[in-house]
Image (cartoon, rainbow, N blue to C red):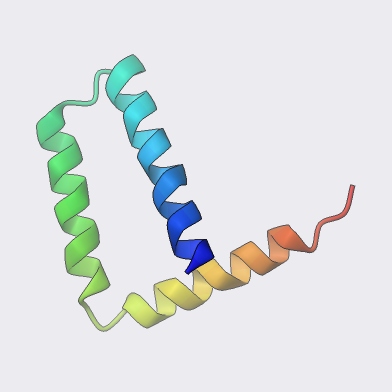
Length: 64
């Protein structure tokens, strides 16, 4: 759950920055959001979730 919320915040922030600075149109953002919903309901969603969890654990294991 925490990974999902932080991912939402991260991608929401990136989308907002693209919208404000790089000229992302609202229609493009809506299409990207709809694509995300369709991918979440597809058969590859578990693979994407597992890949995100693996990447998060990899990044979490880095020590400075």
